[in-house]
Amino acid sequence: MFKKKEALRKQSLIKNSQIKKIVRDFNDQYNSEIQLKNLQYSNFTTFSVYSSDNPVLIELPFQNQLIPSIYLCWQYPILPLVLTPKQVITNYLYNGADLMVPGIIAISREFEEGDIVGITFPNNPYPLVIGKALKSSSSLANETEGKAIQNLHYYGDCLWEMGDKSDPPEFIPDVAALTLDSVDPDVTQDTPQDEQHSKDNTELQEVIITAEDMDLLFEKSFLTSIIKLEDNQFPMTSTIFYSNHMLPNRPEGSTLDIKKSSFKKLTKLLKSMEKKGLIKTKEKNGELFVMSVCRNHPLIAGKEPPKEKKIVKQENKHTVKYQELYKLPSNGPLKRLVQELNSNEFGLEYYDADSVNKLLNAYYSQQNLVDPSNGRNIRVDAYIYDALLTKQEYSLDYMQRDLLKDRFIQKMQPFYSLELPSQSIIK
Image 1: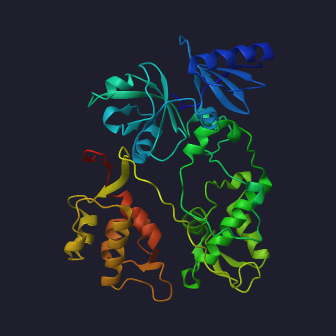
Image 2: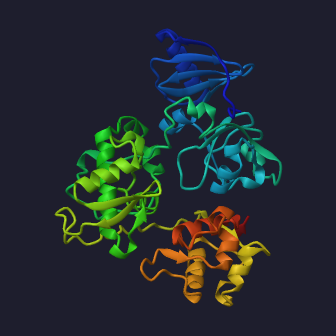
Image 3: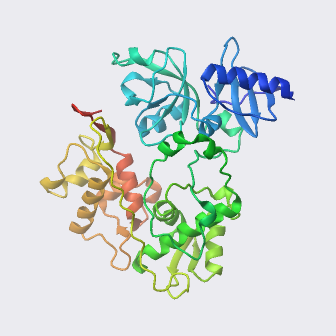
């Protein structure tokens, strides 16, 4: 709905008395308790928006309901959530498509036809798409085809661009306790915080992350990453260092947003760490590389890689397990590459990300493609050229493992599996 920018017709500030009425009407409509101040009204060609720093409420002509923006829904758990696979969101909904019935995995709570709902993927408590239910949740349980949710507004559309263009937030506990001088050993991969979010939403509203707080999070993630990494893993591009190491090693429950830090750019962060004597960097062909780590620096000298926290979860008999899967095309260059392995071990119908990684590593080893001076670089042979490289890259002799794996998965057919108490489903 908001795929294209529209001309602004009128803009004005809203009086406090009007704001109170708007908020009261919204809270009555959604059974919520939002609080808004200093609203600004903007009228466009086909819709109107109430903004408070970011767009928060949307008004459509001939509609008797206000629609919350994703910015507002990231602050308040207003809407029932419809869960769908991540690839459905990224491949279809982010292009403005409606959500079809077969794409629904689960629903957080009941809703009626015409209600506004949020759409997200499993283990993420924040909606990425706002839509209008074309059928009630009870009737959807008996449907197998057709449209389920009309796509109204999504993360990345023109309405989102009217705001600060921020990413979905996460609750960050005890930010004031984070220091550059101590590396927390309890670092783990992403852990959903939806339980705490719903338990005490008021507490969430009071957490304000300053640039100084964000700097500490970045520094903490950086230190944990370089302590974990081996010297033979360098040099490494700054983007790989950030996405494959800093993000997974950030403090539990936190999120990194470079724009909200004082660094503003990843290159400035890495240059700052170089000035402190922690790393050495070098720019090649317009891209910054992390060349090495200074192991004798007092902040990291003698420190062991932090142990990852083991999270023990009690299984619930009603638990639904979700996993993203991938399938090889029936023919073509990807299939031919796998056939070169000549091993039944990798003749799977469906692969997860880990099995794709094992398959590629086995191929690199069998074909002797690993760079002896840097194990992260893979020599490109004819099958890799054919399957994973573009025409502009045919002059390359080596490529990084991570990039090859990502491209391999992107060229596979996406599926997902659901482990229900009574059955297993693959779609």
